[in-house]
Image 1: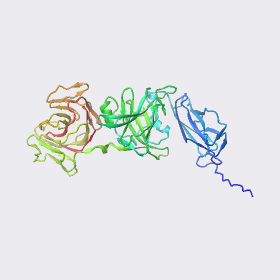
Image 2: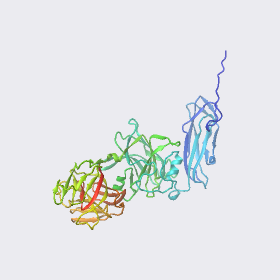
Image 3: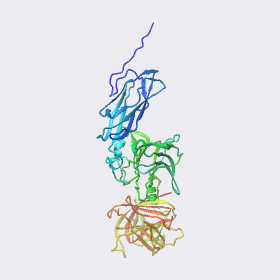
Image 4: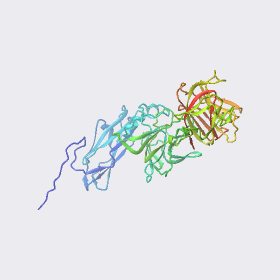
Amino acid sequence: MKVTPIVFLLPALILGVPMTYGQKLTANKSTAVFSAVNGTAGRSDTVELNSVNGRNKVPDLNITGSHAKFFGIVSEKPKEILEGKPEKIVINFRPEVNFVGIARATLQVKGMSSRIELSGLSTKGLEGDNEPSLASVVDALGYKINLGWTTLANSLSPDLQGDELAPALFKKADVNRPVEMIPVARFSPDFPVTFGLYTNTSRGPSQHQNGMLAAAKDFPEHQILFPAFSGGTRVYDPGNEEFGFYAVSPSHTVYSEDLWNLLLHPAHAAHAMRVYPVNDKSGNPVLNTFLVCMEEAANGDYNDYVFLVRNIKPVFLQKRFTSLLNGKNLDGWYTWLETKGKNNDPEKVFTVEADGVLHDSGKEAGYIMTEKGFENYHFKLEFKWGNDKWPPRLNNKRDSGICYNVPADETDKIWPRSVECQIQEGDVGDFWLLGYSTIQVDGKQNAPSMYTRMTKKKDSEKPNGEWNTVEVISFNGKCVHIVNGVVVNYGENSSLIGGRILLQSEFAELFYRNVSIREF
């Protein structure tokens, strides 16, 4: 007896999926993304169709949607599709002359249960104000990320924007797989760009080049989604090392750590990268995947080079700082007062309060000094002024300071040979070169003397009574002073490299907290 098979037909339309009578074909992608200057054709993309069950006749291919006319199939229609032998469907994008923005359409293939979404980013020209915003780039790529702004230009401030990741280095998420760094957008001037991962050494960042972005040729590779890759590899295996990201332009290198931008390229953006966790178009997190957005210029658009990086997890830089005050006592430090000497503080000029804050009454001139020295480091603390002032400075500005790179053999006195980051009302961040020490600012070196002042470039202090954050970076003779996130002074070729650190007491009450250091 002949048995007739029973065939169950799917409903004509379920949640917008076209009617199919059994899955016959599959595609190698569910989305295709394009970009072009309006009125011109951009680079084509290819969709591969494969037969699920043997031989299939020529499928019906239709592009539908409100912007369907901007997309076209430019390849020859295949006569048949055989299982195991995919056929390529080439699609291009040519937006109309007056259209600027994101065009969307759908490629429908009869015999395939899913549709292929088409997205095209159309710009009005090349470079400058013609560029798309990073928000438009992210939207065209199909990610749902809160960047924190939607305009083209934005701030270069280190303050986090939207869902931006806190400052971090990275490690491999899956130890058995390499890191993949995929260029997904570039809107910069036209030149080749080398890029990759870097690891930190005592000499600074060590670059491990992944590849190179090409200069413009058949297409404007400097103003495009998915810029051409010219040599190298998209994958790199850093092993168990922590790493950051970098890219090299003709003028300078940008790093994912602000401190290297500050130290090595102070004339350019310090916060040169913003990194975002990636969410798909439905808002679901994509595991261990981040968007690395780089700023080569200075307008804060962060669309110059954009990379999708896979198989990484953050190692937050805050965890790389070690507290220098234990919140209980002055272990690791010693006191020195001008009238009483070392570790003799009967009036408790320096005390650690119950909340772990270091209280400096300011009643005597002196300091607390670290017992050990540091070579290359990033030191930071928070301070605020108290109310009390003492003779002989009752009528003067409240004054204190961070003196650093004090040599190991320097004698205790007022004040030891060092570089000082001034903490004084209205003058926080000034250089004071003490004990004939020297430094170069703007290419000019101070004349050696007992006390030399080199005034800060910017003012970033908060009003009295509020906590201020002060950071000192000292690295191989380069010294940077940062006040509340703003670089206020930069020097190089310091005569003092490495040493101990002291906090002054200078006849004005103040409080310190969160005193910490990261050594390199």
